[in-house]
Image 1 (cartoon, helix red, strand yellow):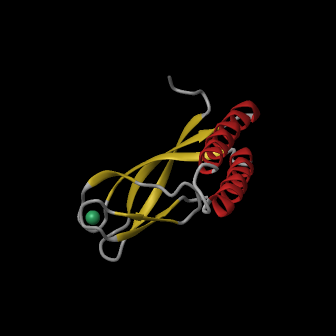
Image 2: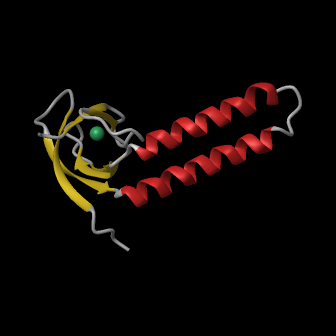
Length: 128
Ligand SMILES: [Zn+2]
């Protein structure tokens, strides 16, 4: 099911050689309810891990508070995420391979991406 809040944005991809190429970026927008649900799911996951690490002797002194804090931090991160880049499709300017790029979980522009074919570092820029 395609959420109605998805939009597609063009981007520019530049490498070391060759002309920068263009591609498309799928961005998903979240409303308040979706943000809260995503945040709670993440919180539940990490607090679940924290609960399990109670069973690990000695290490639990470090693990349990770490996972609890990490879960809380993830919760706030997700709660504040109104937009998320889910897919970037484009052509590598260096080797010309069309592909879907792996994106960092935290969206920022310019975003560094790596070509799956030639393994070169590329820069993904969204024109504002
Ligand atoms: Zn390449």
